[in-house]
Image (tube, rainbow, N blue to C red; front, side, top):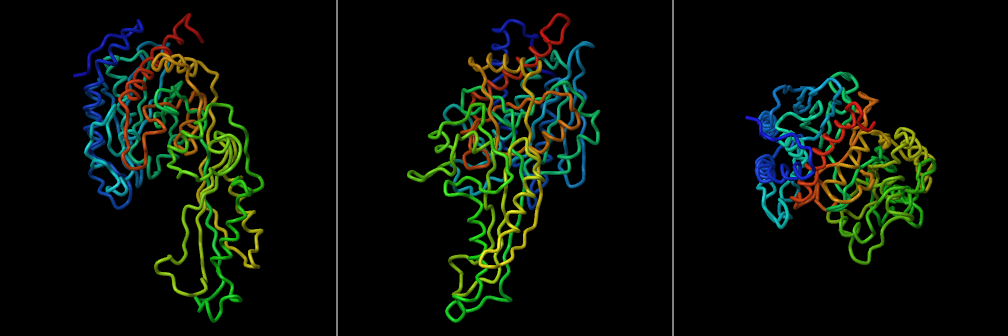
Length: 461
């Protein structure tokens, strides 16, 4: 049976309905978060399917009867569902989230078992409870708030392999009718800080490059040959040292960087979130928003070289590094990758020629924020949190956003949800705050009502 509710009109009605839903919503969130739905190679697929089944059960219980499934090669099932618009002039909104989660990592770093949802002060702790199962429950809670009969049409897409990546990232443009909508809510983000209503309006792009140095046929004695024999690791380190200037800013020509016009974390907040050791300076210069979101970042994410504990007294014949480049939301990631490849191929550290291999790229995204959906969203977030929303960005990429935007180029894309920058997503002791879950649910329900009202004859365009 669907959860019964009266279509809200007065502000107090919707708030009361949401507050009345919270206990059941948190209980169902715990059920979902207890399932280790890790869609990575080497993990059992059964929990992923178990999570899928529970999401379908919860959608049916919220009043959704049209539920399907998209199965693509080497990809966990994508749940699709729809609710027809109540009137011919009502808009359609696509709601997105994902039910898979990151692996827990070192479980000794958790204060409680990662797949035993545990109540904490103000919230619940578990792997994937913020990223992104709380956002799945926001969508289900919004359906419950309207008794399964929202004031707009809905297309729901609940993905099962977002964290690892899959064939679904590029699928939407191949079947645009399946994702038709006027606006979409991508609930895989959250607030800049708890209690600060936030619309994520930009995502950095990404590109990978592997660089390596080959100098000897095999390792040779460092005492007998060191000093003349070319050391591959030294050559590679010298090359990597050219990627940043003395301030730590990326020094590769052709990478776009601009001041960030929105809101960003204060430095002390960022230090706390990132776990920067006391006395250690941050990299780079300029505003944090510029460094994190509106400019490039280069990270050595992998290095093949002898380990300290097992290294022999020998000159290294081969060394390799994998670089991850994050780029300005409006820069073509292929162009940015080409700039990095050119930079590295021009180098001859100690006369050594480097082998440079470009890898995958993913585009960034920047939303247009002047349409009716954004006006409705700003009003809804203000209602939910009692303050004007800020615009922020994400240094991480969400490849599916570009796929959906390409499938439905006329739709407005909104990113908000129940996560926050302190929730430890992808790290130990991930948690969601009950206040953020409640705020995201109220914001989504209020958005659907506001957006529907704007499309009625005589409504605000």
